[in-house]
Length: 525
Image: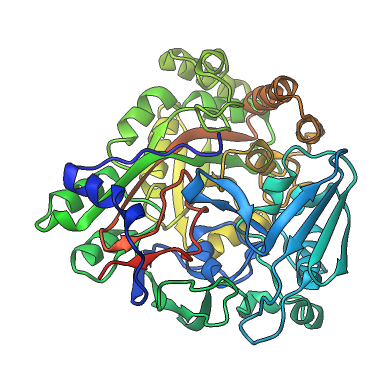
């Protein structure tokens, strides 16, 4: 199962959503939506945030992608078809012909090849956060303008998912050859929409690309993404400034919209979210190199009781390990409760935590929690963690910074303890677990541990096609990670989307990284 979603709503809202599929799309109009953070730059390959995907990804094309209208099925975008050799080592993609970049230049297999080579082996000074997902690619070939061939070093059970990452934008080979950092400050895509302007602190706007290769698409004339604080979203929706916000809203904001006058305007979607809040310890900094300290801080957190309380005020809900609860490869609750940090008796756990801190000589521990200024769910979660650690005598300074310096500090190791969201476009082990490998193997693993056992297990599971054998390896990875406490899984998100009923053709999914190209979205007005 790639995704799980549930549509919830009062009768009128459910009817509005349920009949959308039978309606004939209308052309025209501008979609106005809110984004509660700004992108550090435009480079998809260097990004890991919705702040880039939501405003920028509609301007790019991809080799293949997740289709949220088909429960996250992987479908072709630039690829019109593909084959996998019987030995699983060769992936051959046939591309649509006649595709053009927004400057009118043709997009061919050379551009796909150059883009994935940039991801797999980034030039000096270029950041590629998902290069580990391309580690099994031995060679990329472009035998003709409409064919791309990937030759692998070994079988990889997740390879098609790796190709489908919504951060794997296809760039112009000529532009990145001329200037490898070109995508950081420039948007030259081949997607359904074309860049118009970006006003920092205000908005990014795009218009329909009339040269888009899919006939009669997109439906919208354009879109405008407004960069606002989280607490400005609901007032903006009620006031008619925004038609939607596609990341997620809190239970109280949902209720505020649905109980306000004119609530027949809104369509509600709600379901599990493939995002987990984790605590990262920078193990290169003392005392977080001491496993006793990390374990103590994990034992102090009341995951079971705390998450139930948090679910009433922000968009978190489930307790689990490092894979979404309910996903086929996740550790079941019956296994989790046997592991430190998940024991049901929180007072017993906290007594052990205090003893561990005493043994480590850290009875008066003071720490600085690195967090984002994005209000939900980060501020309430930060406050929750401060309270939990206070109960074992730990003093915490809560440091919240804007998105760009927040991620910059993680990349540069300028933090002690951080609250961090691990988000993937679909339930998939290889993508979800790459955040917990050694930093040398995965640049998005920020704890900087050097535990090669996790790398070995990750590699082995990715090459294991038998589901039962793969699950056993994945469970071993999870248990090892939980007991070593380089990172702590705190809770899993619950996605709540409310949008104006005139917004049609948008499909709910368990990831805010999926389905945001806006190609099929239209306005019933």
